[in-house]
Amino acid sequence: MRNLLLPLLALGMLLFGVSHISNRQKETPQTPPPIKPVVSPYAERIAGAGLVEAATENLAIGTHLQGIVDQVFVQVGQRVRANDPLFELDTRLIRSQIAVQEMRSFSSRAELSRLEQLPRAEDLPPVVARREQADAIVRQWEDEYARQQKLALDGATTESSLVASRQKLAAARADAAGMKAEEDRLRAGAWEADKTIARAAVALADAEVLQLKTQLDLHRVCTPELTDAAGAVELTVLQVNVRPGEAVDTASGKTLVMLGDVRRKHVRVDIDEHDVPRFRSEGAATGVFRGDVARSFPLKFMRLEPFVLPKRSLTGDNTERIDTRVLQVLYEIAADADAIFIGQQMDVFIESRDGAAAAGGSSGIVLPAAEH
Image 1: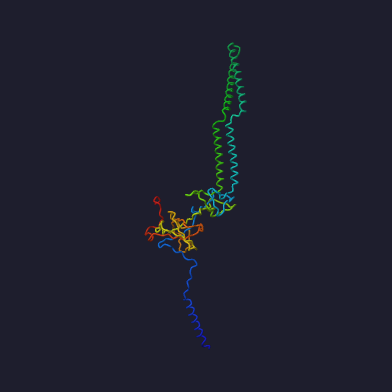
Image 2 (image 1 turned 180 degrees about the vertical axis):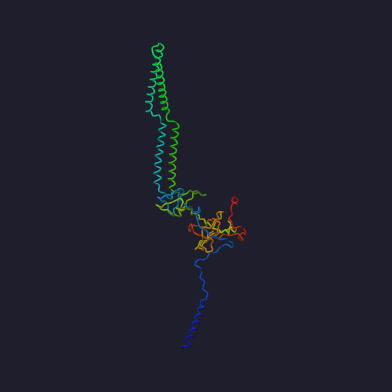
């Protein structure tokens, strides 16, 4: 029995090995994929990844100024019209500055009014009285000088008395002329140059008030005004990324509110630069959403953007190159698009012209003739 143990063990190991090998060589039954792969409806086609966007493109609304958000007037899904408020920054500081500047404007206007109303009725009588007094003194010294002249002819006065009388008359006449000039200046009112300066001060103060009020308006961000063939476009709020109390900045580049016209939806398709020679705008196009291959959507060509740019929207394919340049083409979803959401990714098939890509050529970027 001991002599048969080793052969029996070897035989058992042999049978186990044969059984294991035969089981491993059996073909594994292929199970159908959980989602049917997308099949192009065209024999000659090019394919590209497309992103659904609003007919107006997705409008990324920012802010004119930096500050703290005070109020948000909209919510996601709300429809807004032109000039409807979206959100507003804290306006307490700018309102206080407007109040101060309005007082400065009022002060400048009051100064101009004062200059235009000169002379004051109360200022004239004292000046007129002093001028009449000066005229009376002149008449008095004219009489005195005349008497001195007669006495001098008769030798009844001295030469010094005559000279003194003449000098006092000249001084009285000078005083009277000065008082007359003072009266004329007062009656003429303010100097025109002073009134011009006052008017300029009023205009400057008003302009500063207007500037501050413009800044106040910029604190409130409103819906832009867009029109099409049917008139004003009603937009839908797609995203709200701002809350009361948050700080916003013009340099951050953050989309605070996203708007778009979702009545019609477009698909922005990235066509690989190697497929561009085969693209034709009149070719039929069909789009299929990932995970819903049972439905396909006919696409209508809208326009292409003639600048080939680096690819930004990545699909996650392992063979995808990040240095690829793409031509962006916009199509309109011709079918009912109510169940389609902005930002969804779509596989797009475009009927292409026969033949492969054009041969030869350099790998550089095509520039306009003026830049060569």
